[in-house]
Length: 199
Image (cartoon, rainbow, N blue to C red; front, side):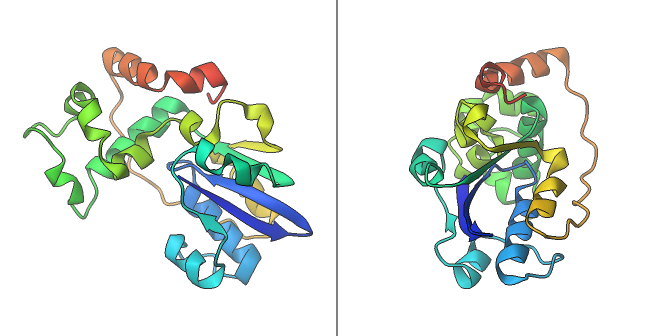
């Protein structure tokens, strides 16, 4: 979804913003390192435009920003289990408190089964695509390309590397367990992550 590229301790850093992989926390760590932002403030594209212009490169896919990552001394990837990432993205985009997603639903059935049945339709939405896309789409197909690779549950290690304070991540309500059929279908959708080692 984006690349955050910046100078820190005489090195050029590149951290890929991979939605549903603690990406908002990671923006906070970078903001703390660059302009001593309050760890409790939520950071986003617009705050970076104000405080650190040119740092946040908003481009959707790895191939779009790889040339910028190539210039970095430190390249950081943060990934999440593919099924967990997809399900988290589904709930985040299709059940947002703002109800902005209501116009996306094709039927009165607001369920994961409905979403999977018409997956191609829902993925036409930029918001759904940003949050339900594979790790591979954002991080590329080679884990070894990065100097540092973290599971999103260990993102506090990035805070430590940047001298930032890790605040407790927002707790999300538990989600219903997937049926075997749902899990198989989601794994099929996210197949490139299993092929490329983002699992």
